[in-house]
Length: 363
Image 1 (cartoon, rainbow, N blue to C red):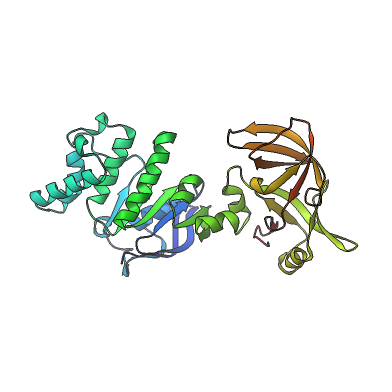
Image 2: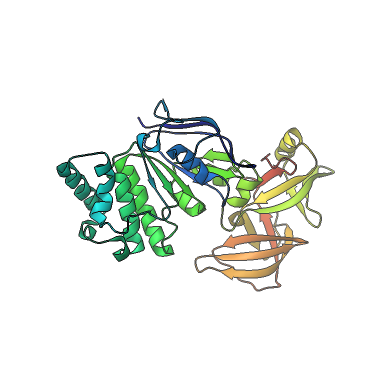
């Protein structure tokens, strides 16, 4: 069993807290993705697990072994870097063989392992080439091979696909996921690309400013974001946000957005009253959950103006102006032009409401 457990990890660089009291568990054979914007602490977390950075506080376990004071080469982890870090003067064969030679493994065993790994990655025809003769995808496979050949307990990957072009990145993403499942090696993967994270991960751990914001499967971080940051960070286009407050008129409840009102049922009103710390709220709705129509109905009761259209082929992003607010809707088909008036609605089952002061989800 190659579990990885991180408990209350903290790392500072001078006055900057790069990683702030981060804790998570990675199960045996699981792929966890550390996701977040640049500078959020995800790579520093990975480097602490690898032993390339010393943790100031907290504990790191691989299996049940505390490895804080264990040298990187003795942690039985293999790291794949963004730059691939291949030795330019060595052939692909020698790059793959190098970590085995360092462990003084016999030549016959090295030859067997290198050739088996090359076959697995479909690069046996490249074994005599040097890194400068490889394409980006070939170099990436070689870097993966150098990690795989060691048969480590844990793979640590720091944005290994970021140097590839868009088409190859999509292809290698699926190849990497299948490879990880076939090998059954516990993997921690760092990326800033949310699509990469959501498609690869068994668990997504989202970080911001050194703090772990949410850790869950892809479905839950998308549909049940814990706070405003996650709602705005996950999704393309991101979630729409409208500042508002709770308003009651006669027997009806609304979210008052200033120039527009959003009707809500009694059940949502009760949740707001129970959980909100102030009257200031934020309404969140995904672009695909915005319903459009040319005629007013019970479900489409907010008038908007088409601000701009962004056709993508398979769908259209419609930018809408509701009073002073701009929101985005995605739809498979839209007949209309800039300046047209349309009616907009949101399903109460699809909306999110956040406490503006604390940023946490209420609904």
